[in-house]
Length: 93
Image (cartoon, rainbow, N blue to C red; front, side, top):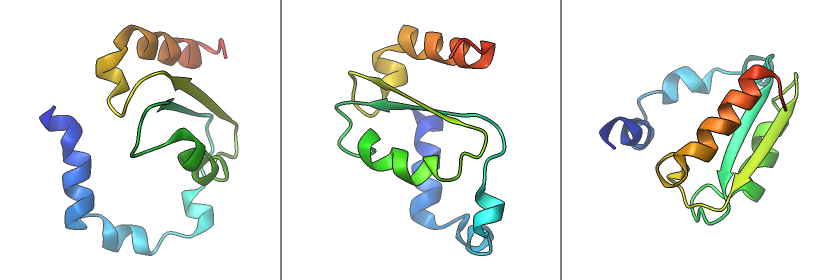
C-alpha cells in the first residue's frame, strides 16, 4: 500500500505543482489511446466525474471500464483489472 499512497502524499505536498503550472492544454493532450478503470462504489474518484476531465485530453481515443469496486479496485478485483489491462494493451477493446 505504501507505493500506492505516494501519489497522494506528493499531491498533498505540492511536489509537482510548479512543473504542472506551466503546462498548456497542448502539453496535457495524450497522443496515445487512454484507458481509465473506475470503481462504481468509489466515493473519491467517481467515474462519472473523472471521465469528462480526462476524455477531453485523450486525442487518440478514450475507453472507460467500470468495476463494482471502491477506490482500490486493483486490490478488490485484481483478476478483472488484469484482464482489462491485457485486453487494452492487446488491442481487444
